[in-house]
Length: 56
Image 1: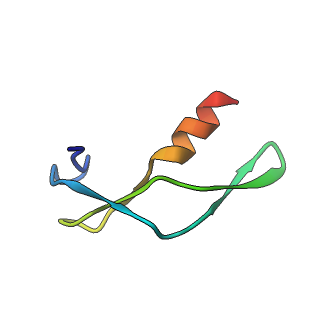
Image 2: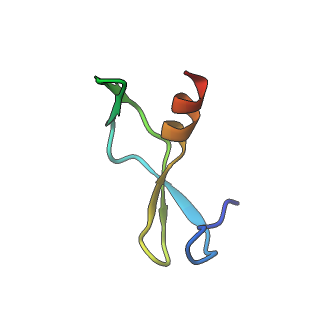
Image 3: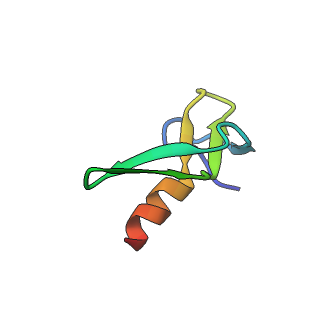
């Protein structure tokens, strides 16, 4: 299981939001995030955003 980088507690997969806007080079696109929420501190991390931006 993946742990929160803020408090080291387990992250839980969430389904909200369905999409997030990504602004890059003057353009905006919508992507479907893999969102994880920390049950301990409430942090939300979006795995897909980093992955998709790294592919460009």
